Amino acid sequence: DTEVTQTPKHLVMGMTNKKSLKCEQHMGHRAMYWYKQKAKKPPELMFVYSYEKLSINESVPSRFSPECPNSSLLNLHLHALQPEDSALYLCASSQGYPQPQHFGDGTRLSIL
Amino acid sequence: GENVEQHPSTLSVQEGDSAVIKCTYSDSASNYFPWYKQELGKRPQLIIDIRSNVGEKKDQRIAVTLNKTAKHFSLHITETQPEDSAVYFCAALSGTYKYIFGTGTRLKVLA
Image (cartoon, rainbow over all chains, first blue to last red; front, side, top):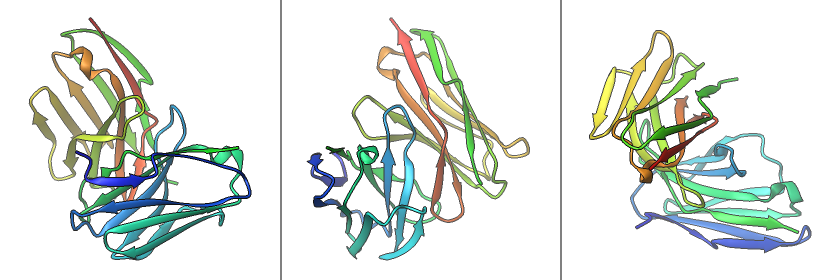
């Protein structure tokens, strides 16, 4: 019973493709996060949105473009990715500060 | 920059024994410390957390202790069971929304 829903679960794309990852939560949380996780490594923070505004960008390459259309939705637009971008991309949300994060099941991304 | 060190990287215990995982954080302003369990191919799940105004918190077989002076916090699992086998991550909140994760501990509970 995951409360943070991510789609798609798996994505394979070429280096010239454009795709988007989606994340949705209906818990009324005001902060939403994107993480990248490589195998056997901890989640690595990419972006944080607070009240639909970008609060943190951890110097992520511009080929990753986040978007927060409303308080329940978070997108990650992908363009011209590299093979090293293959990873599990996790979305999370939290009520505010300091509150626990709830993670989605992630999108497993493979770049060919 | 801020970082969180976590030890050990792997831990094997016999079923029924206790397991202890330790973390040290660098940002003295950190005031919230969650612990996550991640099974293979699954999402991180919060198992326990502690705030800086508390020294210890317990939830059944799981406990967390915090030493703010030393900037240490630890996870204690008692009466371990095979289903406790997973990777455990500690984290420290640095600033308003920036969670810094430890490098993870792979716990194996041997039946």
